[in-house]
Picture 1 (cartoon, one colour):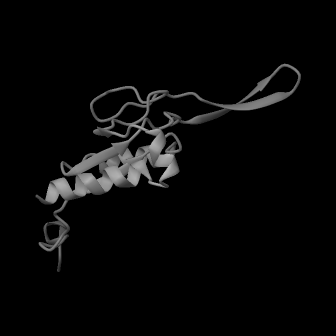
Picture 2 (picture 1 turned 180 degrees about the vertical axis):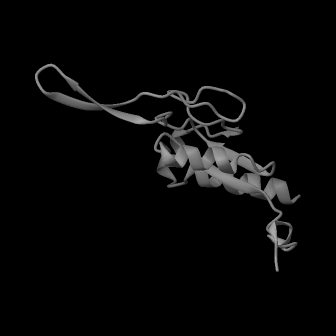
Length: 120
């Protein structure tokens, strides 16, 4: 009978994990990113995520206007506030105007660069 000490495999993936993040990374994606960042071989590439994580509350304002606001501050594993700031970025992506004309994805290019650097 297998117990918890028998879970997993020696053949698990031991390479780097590259996470690509931008301002469209929000809510659950930010939580998932923070979980994956706990892997010491995770490298987060990109620009600030939206910082829109936290529990969501429905508020009604005068005149019957309804809106959603995040009400609970979220901290990452180092107790750094996430709301409005986003997940920790290890390698920033800088936009250059020539990448638009050449149809180059700067996020994917930087992720590939990090993958190749990690192999060397």
